[in-house]
Length: 59
Image (cartoon, rainbow, N blue to C red; front, side, top):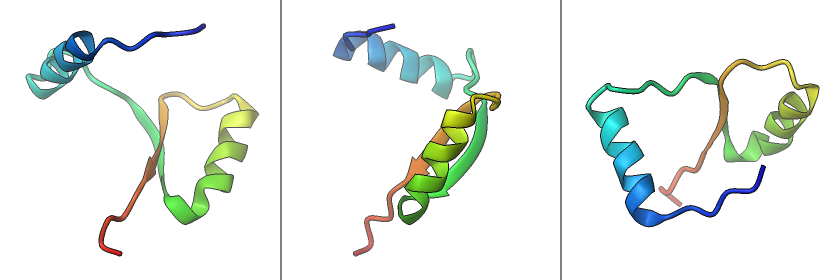
């Protein structure tokens, strides 16, 4: 499925999440150096929820 993100629609979704009207299920969170592990988990295809990669901006 291809998606063309529209800023206003993305903001509306973010607002819904902030108000707890929708929930985003996170399967697992990985720091950026472990992105390859996150990719492998994604390729297994058995996760329920999103796989999140965090970026530490304190460089």
